[in-house]
Structure formats: structure tokens, C-alpha cells
Amino acid sequence: MALVTLDAIVLQAFPYSETSKILRLLTPSHGVQSVIAKGARRPRSRFGGILEPFTDGAATFYLRANRDLHNLSEFDLSRSRQGLGGDLVRFGAASLLAEMVLRTASEVAAPEVFDRVRASLNELETAPAGRIEAVALAEAWALVTTLGFGPSLDLCVACGGELPGEESLFLDYSAGGIYCGLCPGGGGAGRALPARARADLRAFCTGTAVELERAGAHWQLLSRFLAYHLVEAGSLRSLDFLADALSTG
Ligand SMILES: [Zn+2]
Image (cartoon, rainbow, N blue to C red):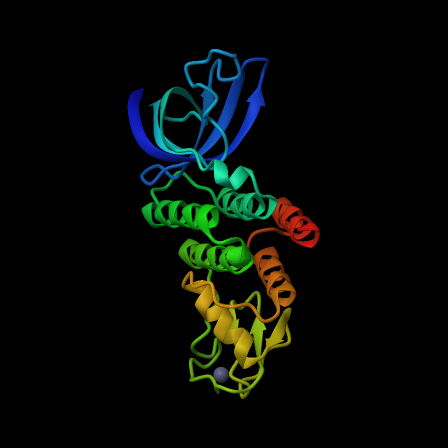
């Protein structure tokens, strides 16, 4: 049993028993870890009510080999990100990033995923209201790329050849890329993407929130792509929540 202090982002927090909370924490060096914060729901808990989703801080816990749940000893807050909780779209987009990480979670070190999520949450919290939808799409695709299953957009997924610039080309979800138009293929699940949509997607994958032309089509594309890579025969709850938030907002 080792007492460790790690940078951590709370991805998920849920009540446990009358008085405690279970947290899923994203760390740079130990991937996703589950901890129990005993007494965190008591009015005068030493954790002081800060253990909410998207909070950033240093978590101290007893890391026990072969255990799935560790005992949280301290959480030293560095950023609470309350701005995310006050806006349904921001909250939904942040929840989507958290759900994407949890769906792919492992305890393996992934500092680039940690850095990406931290930067993305900051962006989502501070983006101007009129830009939030584009920022949400960009952060989601950038995380897809960091998690290692970003679509191949520059060369044909079959022959590796250059893609013609102006034409509408087929993005195959399961192959994870675009066909050049000369190669056979493109019979699987996917959709034709006009040149503009491909350019936007390429920008999103680098985290650049370009001006949106057809936001609905982009959300549908993201949703279908994630369904192939993250969820079998189901959907991400946070994407459904976000769709509702966008339609009511
Ligand atoms: Zn080809």
C-alpha cells in the first residue's frame, strides 16, 4: 500500500451510502482510478463539498495493488470549474468528454489524455457563449484523436493516395477514414462528406473551433462515429443530454 499524491480531474462523482462519495479520477500517471471519499457528504466534511465533476486538484490516496477502489485521504483543490455547472451546453459537453474517457478507461499512464481533458475543460468553461457549440465539437474530436482513434482525413484509407480536394468523399466509420473515390470500398456504414465538411472535421481534430456551417450534421457525424468506436449498439448518455440542451438553448 502506497500513499500517492497525483494531479487529478474528477470525471464522475456519485453518492455512496449515507455519507460518502465514489469518484472516478483521471490522472496523468495512473489513468482512471476509482476512490472512495469517506464522509464527503457530511455537512462538515474535510473535503468541504468540492468533490464535484470536472474539479481539478491534487488527490492523495492509498493506492493498493489489486484493488479497484482506493481510499481518498485528501483533495487539494486547484480549480473547481463552477462555470461548467451553470450552463447546460457547457456541462453537457464536459460530460461528453468525461464519458468518452470513461468508456476507454484504463489504469495505464496517459499524460497526453490528461493534458487534453484539462485544456478542453478550461476551453469549455471560458468560451464565449456564441462559440460554445463549435468549441464543444472541436474538443470532442480533439479528444477522439488523442485517444487514438481519430479519422484518417489526409490520405485514402485504402490505397494511401492523395484525396481529391473538391469532391464529396465517403468517410467509413469502422475503417476510420476516407476513400479516395477510385478505390473500391465505401460500402460500410459511413457518410459522404463534402469538401467543406472534411475541412471542418480536420480542423476539429486538431482542436480548432471553426465557424460552423451545419452544426446538426456535425453532431450527427460525431454521434455515429463514436457509436462505432466507443459504444456497441447504444449511445452515449451525455450526447443525448447535450442534444436536448442544444435544442432547448
Ligand atoms: Zn484510394
